[in-house]
Length: 301
Length: 301
Image 1: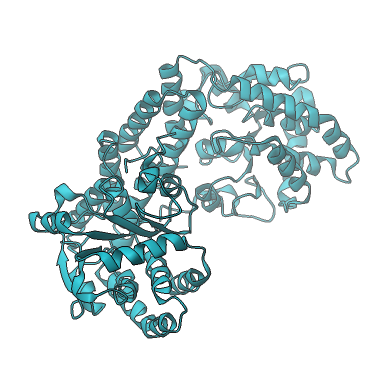
Image 2 (image 1 turned 90 degrees about the vertical axis):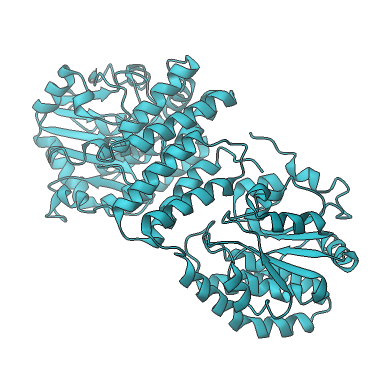
């Protein structure tokens, strides 16, 4: 997905939010703000928004000397999600359609996104998970995803954020574990999950976990490691979580199924659903014969 | 008032809104957006936000070749307000406190601000005017303003926007007309009132109307004409309408009374009231012994 003009004020807001979250020094706030403005003035708008996110957060880490400023927030999100995990696991097992229940919870967990939102209270996570059980979802697309998971020999699961990755585990546990590889980021970026978070979620004991070699808050293939790119090319099915992966991979290929909670009006317009909805987009969704190419039909307006 | 960091994303949003309002050419949208980002990256943050507004809208006029892109919007706002005028005039005359009713309507008219908001429907104006009658207002400050108007020999009334200026007329008609001079902008800027709008509102037949020689969406004295500055210095009382005048004059002197509807959280914080409220701020407001210096007590946070 390209960067829309509307993304630009949002970059500036996110820069301020992030700078204030990470340091109280107003000189760093101002410096990062001015640097972001200069960078945005020259950025190629055909790049996806996470291209800019990477640059803003790299610079923030440099200016503050903090290699992983969201470490504590990530640990707290993991701990909070792990508290919820046993109850949700029982809820899924008791459900008439455990796979669909797990999909809902995995998508609901995508609310834990400190790029889209600078602060998130525990009760917002609770509300999102409770809301997910009753939220409308494209059940045809869920069924199609289920079929594809059963057919695929090699499944890549591109994780998104810390905390959220615990909810991903609920969905991954619905799959044949030996066929699944979970992918985390290669270095800290915002609250995106890294290997430490996959470990905290207990995933390293269940499935293979690799990293993509990159600190982009999404998946820009040319910025990922050669090893990851090879795994990406070989996979039969790629489950990509969250807005960042949608923004960076939406035009890639039809092996990808996107699972995300829509948090911004630009993505909502691009996908064609409303903000707050649970989105599942797959190229063979039976109720949508045009498949995911439809997703990219909306030009700048 | 200085430019707060939070004003910067808003500049970018306003640039996009304005560019899209004035032209459908995406090349101009992009060019103006990039120029605004470059300018914002270097701007002195001790300047008030209208300093930037002037530059953005000047450039938009240059790029589109339209000297007064909001002319039609201004005419429509005047015409719509003039339709409401006779009924509101009767309402004021029937009121127990006609001066207070006129103050409320003049402030409510400040909703017609195409800088703060790119589109405004007629029914939003209706709702604002109806809402104004019941809105809480600082009646001590209204009474203090009434006393100062009665005592002042030379009153400058700094108008804000087209359309709104018709509601200003309702308040001006509560004063001794020979003592009042209405000030409009010296050149088109957003939907700010110029002489044409004062004429449309019927003010030129009632009171002296001058312009300030400037195209700033507010009043930056050093950018105004020498003639206006002299009038400003001589005035006993200056009634300044709208956010733009508050942003540019809030630290000027205690002869100024600000009347505005608060449309942005930064101004709300700076003034110390909530968004949407009717604000009247005067240095001798009896319930506020610290006067308007309190307004400027909030530092960047």
